[in-house]
Image 1 (cartoon, rainbow, N blue to C red):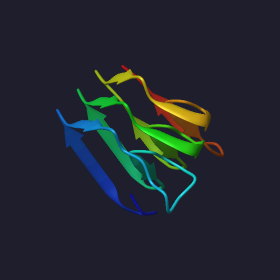
Image 2 (cartoon, helix red, strand yellow; image 1 turned 90 degrees about the vertical axis):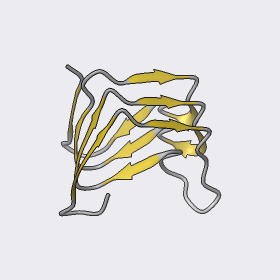
Image 3 (spheres, rainbow, N blue to C red; image 1 turned 45 degrees about the vertical axis):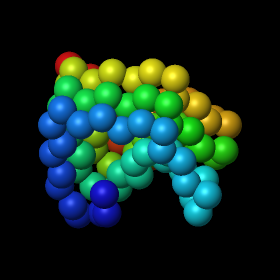
Image 4 (cartoon, rainbow, N blue to C red; image 1 turned 60 degrees about the horizontal axis):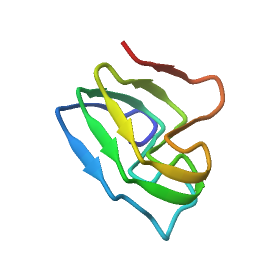
Length: 88
């Protein structure tokens, strides 16, 4: 999500994500406002950081499941700057 964007995703499954074009975020890169509700992120990977999510914005993860995500640094989520990540 780009800076200034607000997105809500419900009951989504993101699996086996990988990007050769980026060193961040195997499934998602967030710089805006992102809420993932009851989502599953599994099997995502990146050589850089944030196997499932690279976050530089606001991120809410109520009811989400993370499994078997991998990265050189921060296997599931890499949270940058003064961002807030919440899981309810």
